[in-house]
Length: 248
Length: 292
Image 1: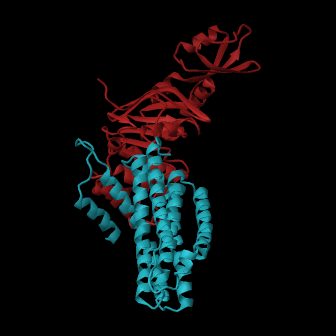
Image 2 (image 1 turned 120 degrees about the vertical axis):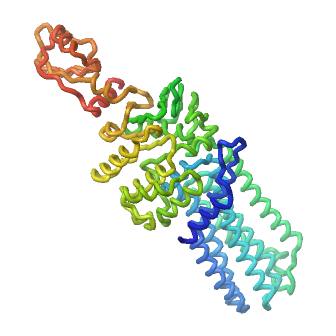
Image 3 (image 1 turned 90 degrees about the horizontal axis):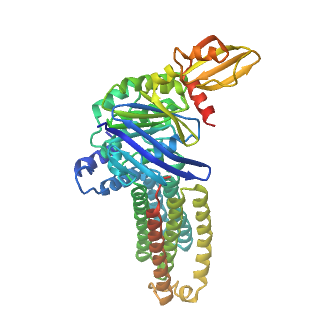
């Protein structure tokens, strides 16, 4: 039996299915099963992207300015592609491919479904995002590359995560391919502007070639603002989903 | 006291281009109800309310004793739902879907699922993207039936099937639905499918329930008379749903077709030339035309 089936069956065996007839009913088990299902649907693509990530980190690890810059561009592209693929595949396509009707037949509410989607998408993006960012930082600290680039690497990575949360929220709230792609395009354009903007900031620019990472008030403020915006978007998405009275 | 698989009381719902007012519909346990209506009649809306997917603006929905949509999670453990627009994950196999459903529904009957695989001539290890539309419909039915739900809700499951696949699906369903414990709501705009499966038939049009009776009552009560108009023929006849005049001839459709009705026609100046039973489709169309 393939591993995917084992995973589902193991899950059934290891955790007792929620029984609605036994008093206090919680749908945590269903949400968990939906997250596992999404993981199974995406795991092959994710493995391929992670293999690409390892290759790119290897390029960056050659520690020449050319290879590092090429690697950085490829890494940004990879992070964007992983986010776009998972939000389109797991949210937008669920409606487009009409598998949403199949999900509707399961013992879940619209809120359970949205919460499961939010959790699975975040997990499926955050895990490779953390590995890729961690890999990049590891390359920087273990090679002669200036450690001064660390703040900009972190800030750009957080901006990409913020962009991902924006189009994930759009996908979850609208299930519309058009709106989701529009937000993707806008956030990608903003990313270019953001990189140019921070590179021109003296507080960032002047420390790029420093031997150590220099976290000044500007970079810390930007980092905290990015994290606050990510949390804000996620909380807003969850609260808007909670108000929905219809699945469709 | 009669027990119901579902009860919808005074349901109203309003969309920009569709509204449903005061719908009352209930299905006694163990019965098969066919819901007939043209596209846009409100069949899918009715079914979505029964599944807790859509909240009515007013009224009460109870399914298997649960209030919907509030208790939809609990209710859905015992409701099997399949619709024509339901698709499975293309990249996965039918076996993967069976395992997934088993993980959600502990009562999923693996042995019965295997039996259905054989009856529907499906292959568990085949990916969904390689299945024909007919096979996909059968796969969805397999996943639903093997759960042995107390209430089966089928929203136009035969739409888009070729005649052979449709006949296969209907025959299998007829066989499977012999289980007296199971209640079934089956919607379609195809009256032939409904006729084969249903005990009770509801006609729905523009959000209104036009009629709800058992199949035999419809077929007994409705009739078509071909008549020759006498010089003293009156304009209307009691009990006539429609009168189509063509020169000296007239076609009278009635929903009060008894042995005495021909005599009543005669007395009203309509000399009966022929009397015909009507098909369910003709009865449905006559019902819709009368209501519009």
